Image (cartoon, rainbow over all chains, first blue to last red; front, side, top):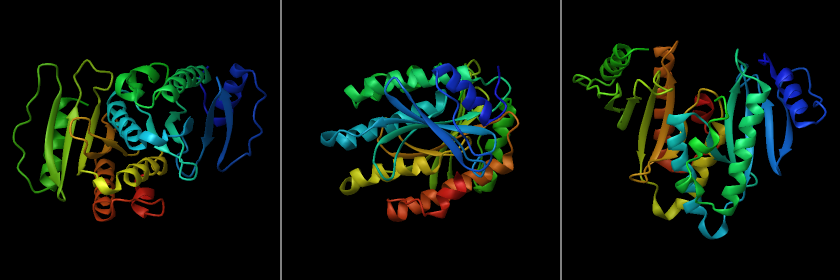
Length: 152
Length: 150
């Protein structure tokens, strides 16, 4: 069933994961986090930024100390490829320095919590592979690995 | 949007940049592209092949140049943090050109129902960010150019 707003999306997702629905404020910036296959995913709605979509931010983790520049360059090149094939952007948390993968999930006619859930699963699988090989994005295109299950 | 409107986009941008707009060459698969210099920044626009699921999206890539070697670690980190600040459904993002390693600021414009005036506003936002980056190479969340583009 398509989701018309953030509450429906949050409740539908938590039902699929088997968790209790999050307690959300009625308005303003609100969100919640879930752990999927040991990967943290934050889902939030910021009406001041965009009324019509949720933001999904997956924590990939720390950069490898010995090859931080190369790892970032690989992710930035992935950003270049992903812009053409589907969406999603690699970024970095200002405070922790951890690598993030972010995208917007629009509340549109055909978008369902299941779409979101399947996309999150594909991303979580990629996260585990990235943590073993921080240059993974060079060899295994995140666009084709993570995008098929995502509505972005 | 049809090629004719991509062509129209090309003509309009060329006019705004006070440049000639030679005939747009279209490849056999329906893809097309053009290069233009806007406020001193080389920009490439491309339309994917007709069979692509993104055929109705125009992609803009603004080339900001090389990352200075002496600040590579902080510089790439600042751009990745700027990407977080730019989080939105309709925002540009920073990337790296695989063939040359240059810094890119890129934007995907949905041509179906797109608003050319909004597109021009977005391109101007990108130019402001590009100018800021060229001056300092280290962007910060407080930079208003980032907030405007998100």
